[in-house]
Length: 74
Image (cartoon, rainbow, N blue to C red; front, side, top):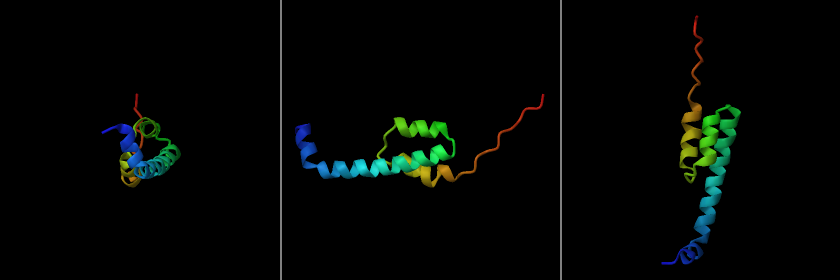
C-alpha cells in the first residue's frame, strides 16, 4: 500500500491527532515553563508522543512537590 494513499484515506484522523498532540504539548510546555523545569521543557520540545507523555506530566509529575535543595556545610 502506498503511503500517499494511506495519508489521503486517513487525513481527518491525522488532523485530529495533530490537534490533540499540539494541545497537550502546549499545556505541558506552559506548566513546565511556569515551574522552571527546563529538563521537562526540553523533553516536550524534542520528543513527540502524541500527547501521552504530556498527559502523564500534567496529571502526575507536575503535581509532585519539589524537593528542597540541601546545602552542604563545610
